[in-house]
Structures are given as C-alpha cells and as structure tokens.
Length: 88
Image (cartoon, rainbow, N blue to C red):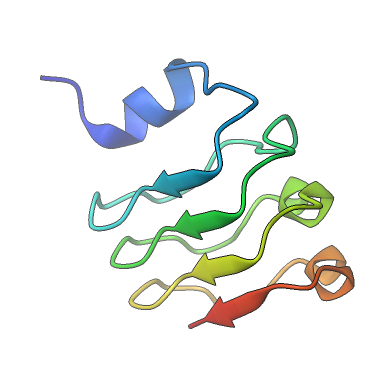
C-alpha cells in the first residue's frame, strides 16, 4: 500500500471536489491546490505539516480549514484575503 503522502501528490484530484479529508496521515506537505476552485473544506489536521502551499490563497470557495495538530509556524499571507474559518 502506498503512503498517503505519495498518493495525494500523484493522484489527480477532481476540480469539482468540495471537501478534502487528509487528516491523520503524517503528511509533511500538501500539493498545490489551486485547481480545486470548488473546494469548500480542507481537513488536514493531525499531520506533520510545516507549511501550506501559497496556492491555498487562490481557493475562492474555501470556507473551512482544519489544521490542528500540525507543526505550522505561519500561514501564507494570501489566506487573509479569503473568507475562511481557520481551526489551528
């Protein structure tokens, strides 16, 4: 079985995706998400993320961002332009 960190980078995600559950997979990074313009919820809590891709600020539909239990020290500045509820 492939680790989740490899699958999320190699598997193309559908552009119409509205919710992405990537919690508890020991992910260190997330791929660029800018093609997911319909994404409303990203649950990536309980991983080992140290940063988020800058492209997260290009998700106009994003409303919920769940990031608890990661190693983040900062968020991309562009995220401040979104109307999103951030849980860290």
